[in-house]
Image 1 (tube, rainbow, N blue to C red):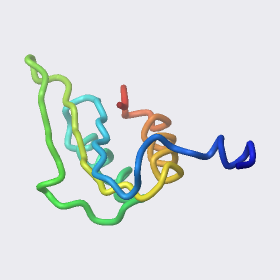
Image 2: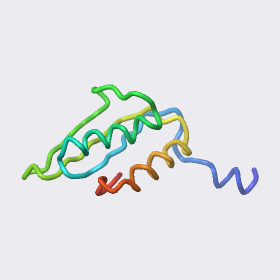
Image 3: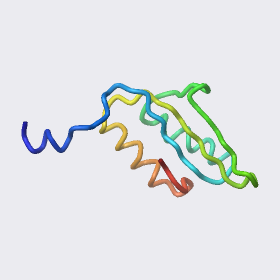
Length: 92
């Protein structure tokens, strides 16, 4: 195995179900952005794949979208876009 192949290996077996969690302010704008950032990479997301938890005071929200990930490159691209968006305060 070449060094490049070894560096591109993932400990995750694909395809697999993978949760992507984003946190931000609890606004309709953030809800729409969070879903659209994922749909860019995986296509339409069903309502059953989305879990929303609001903070105690209702100012913040976490949105978890469970996707069928097909590759490490796909996950890397999702996290680059999600982490780079100004409305996403944190991504896990």
